[in-house]
Length: 267
Image 1 (tube, rainbow, N blue to C red):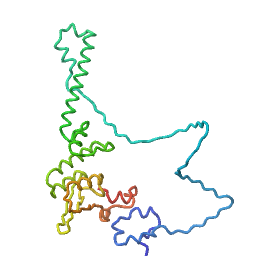
Image 2 (image 1 turned 135 degrees about the horizontal axis):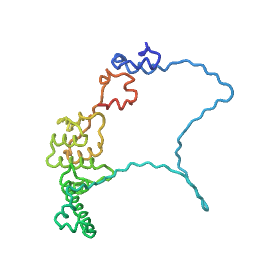
Image 3 (image 1 turned 30 degrees about the horizontal axis):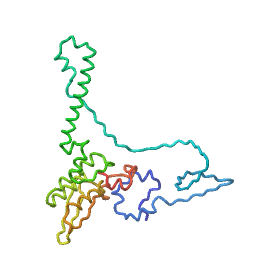
């Protein structure tokens, strides 16, 4: 007997995962795909389609070949914009200390504008130095942190990722313990992590419990673990996914816009 008795997708929309739970996944393979149709065509049957073809060609040109074409290029670029907002009105502060007959002077106005510009630059540089002292706020000088910790800078990565890598390396300093490995893995996955040890088998498992699916930055996490773990220990990862029980209260319609991968990692 077919798992789905309804004949149209509109009727299936109201079925929940709980209704389908007693059936095997194999039961749904042929559901809603059987149909009988009769097609009669006379004359010419035209079909139009669109295909993308990629090829590599070698072109040998002689003389001058001038072509004009329009190309649309899309690119993702990370731009860091530093905005300097002065905490003090330097110009008015200086004017208040001067005689009033200077207030309308064009020469004094130009001079104070130049002073104000440099004082704001000095304030911005001081703020940059202060922010660079802390890994959570460093931007311009993140390369100094990476250099001190022996990290190869990856300019293609955003600053927040590079800061997380610095913090993970800082946590890895000292004697390697279970808590250290857990802290390093948590920093890369941005979620809770459980480290399960198997001493008799000389291995441990890093289980990601705070994030669904495979976290980002796994290659960098593996590189850090290779540096800090004892050389005789092997390790593996255990990822967390949603089960069918997570969808018991959902209908086909409510998850229509999601892929199976989205459902597995949906929080």
